[in-house]
Length: 193
Image 1: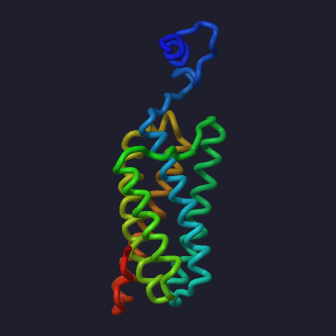
Image 2 (image 1 turned 90 degrees about the vertical axis):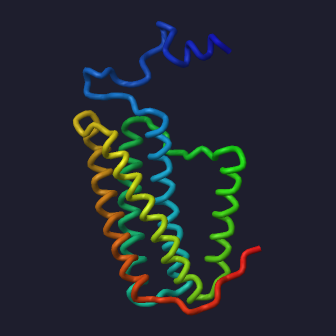
Image 3 (image 1 turned 180 degrees about the horizontal axis):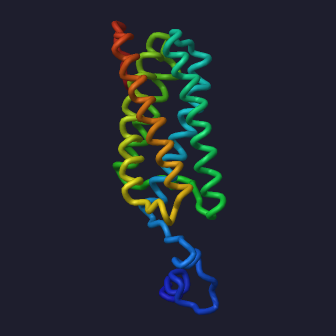
């Protein structure tokens, strides 16, 4: 076990370096940054899947216009992030957490998904806007934190992606704020089991 840790950390002189040396303009990304990038990739993917579902559920004109924008912009950001990760041999696979907090998060995601899948058009649109508001608000904060941690000189493509993502996500958040003001929902809440 100790030998595996030593070899994995680069203690074996026969192993090639895991990343390019700093002199080539590359510094390794820590596990927290990698996890955050995987989280962002999953978020882009989830938003495009939700946009597909929203097309079938039916949305009011302005909300449908936002949905089209969200689908296109999130697809583009996902492609940009995947291309960068591929060039640098970085996995964007999000590893599921363990323990009670991770289990509670999975249960919450499942319950939210049930509301969206089984609600009528009005219920779907209401919760779609609320969930997207919360999601984009969180994502804008993640973008900002990562931008402060990434050195643009050493990771120019990643910094460009994060700048684009922050701009798109902040714009999406503002669009949702306006839609929430326009569409005040008066329906009954969907009961949770």
